Length: 195
Image 1 (cartoon, one colour):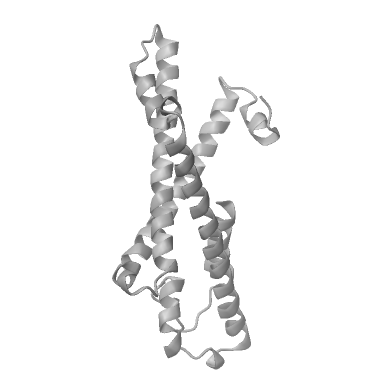
Image 2 (cartoon, rainbow, N blue to C red):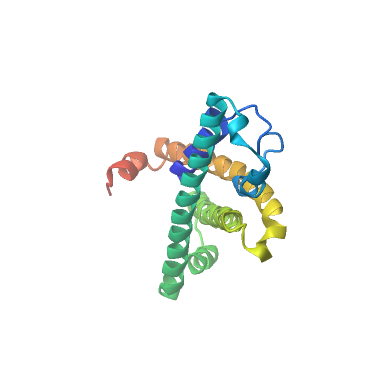
């Protein structure tokens, strides 16, 4: 996921240029840029603009390949969840946690935290599904039946990226906060593979 974010940052900042070529003024997705390239003559650009144009497209290609890899990982996660024992599935664990009786305030807080974390995972996977689905639509924009939805898919993809950035930031803050309070050593264990 980090590599995908880095390619977005690189393509959106380092290789941004000021010519009237595809995607600059209207901020169109790279897939729509492909459609319009026959109207655009890169030879009329300065050497710096041409280099930026070329590298920007290469970075978006890398982003697309990373996206395919993330889609594969997401599909693998779905298959793993679907083939698990029913008692081990995420939804079953959430339902079991809801029905567990609690004795005292600390247990109530632990239960709320557990449910919050598990529901947050569901939100993450929903956002991930949206990114994967809209990314695939943009990647296969040449397919005739997808052409009408490429524009909306790009808008959704662009918006959801900010929700994922917010989720990642909230996740990091939550993990560090938990590490500093009740679950000391959690970050170290995550990084070093400890208990």
